[in-house]
Length: 632
Image (cartoon, one colour):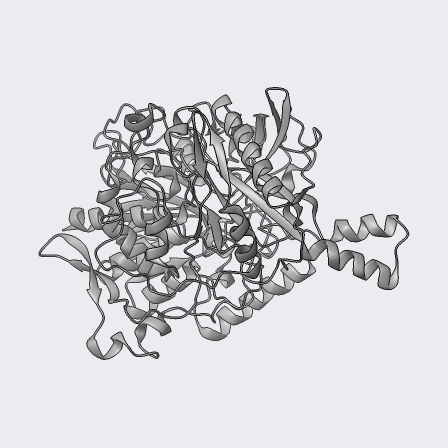
């Protein structure tokens, strides 16, 4: 056991852990970063990083099922939640064969990756801010709970997150199209993003031009369909009007601040802004999930590399280290250490070494599910009985059809445009809001096209040129929408543990209890109604079908719908102003232990309609600032 004591011990090398490590080491602190995944995956030298990434790519190319985790190692010592584990799940039954123990009554249909870099290795890269009303759902619509602070509090931290990720996007476009925002204050005055927006794909341009002509009945009113370009965490063209260089700790002021670029760098195409982001520009491979072949997309290893290179000696990384217990002192209620098991890749799972990490402050930065599991296993931070509760995801209702002319999906990234007009409105009193990306993957998600198209046409005795022409006509006209419906924070949707359910290393598996409320099912009904109107107006032939035998099939008002997970795992240790109803305060410090912080999507009290990674990064900067204040 190591007796070295660090300023901060961080568990998890995803984006939240990476931001904590980088921000604190830049401020002169020593940080120990524990990562459950393979040591090879965290190689930070150019040759090692390239070799590991090429191995991921080769694994992806060979995989029969191109699921989000398919490029990455499947480890018995540090297993990941995987959507492929859901094969065989039936509503109302239990499923115990996968890493997530599904207790139902409905399946939780999202996954994450326990590898260095975390789920940023297979995220889509969408970097949307939440809307102001997302922070005050109870006050505004009588639903859910309010956040402990308003949107304006998080705005400067959003700017830090956009710099760290290197967001490409058009601020003016968002201001002109997002619903229910103050156009003068949603972004700062004259604010621009680090890179210009990703060009609109051909499909998005053709489809959006038809959709914006449509008005859809919604309750007692109608909503004009509107589309907006989507900001993304991938390299495009640097925006040389962007003024910032880094996030710095101002000890005198006691806060984090954005440091301006030096004058000679501000307009230089070879300045620090362009070189900061390892990887090429987006080449439009349409394989952002699960892996970008040219590393144009941000991943957390870039942040870790920056932390390691900028201040050698301050960051210590131990990979293949699985945290399993948070030690607390019953008298002081402080955390006194993190127990973890180190393993060797090819050794038997039980051939591990028990270790102890000590620090002044401790940060759990694994995931909403893993943070909750670790706290429950440690009987820590749970005086509110909210640890593990309020598990949420965006539940995706897919609709698909054939456009009357070729729109050529798969040219460009996964999506460049979204229907933003249903992200907020008075309808949220009756059903959840949603965002609807215009997907650029054909029908691959719902029916595994183009393989399914080939199978269908071969079954019709088509071969050779006839088969090729038929597949070309079908695939080139495919349009897919997915309505990402926010989910209500229900305490009965939760992560628990069971002493009979453990993995190969002897650690607890997460046990999931999950259902879909009527509030969300009403959104499925409303979203399908919107899809019907859009398809009819645009002469799109609807091929949507929901099979009662599908995983995630539910009914509402006599109609069936199938939901799919978005991989946006939120809740389980929410923040708030009251220790009786929340796990952490507004700075992500646990109410029960004043030297334990929880970072990640688990802190979010509500989900909204934004992919949560940018908000997670923003709240992590806020937590890092609080940690530095406490250490001072």
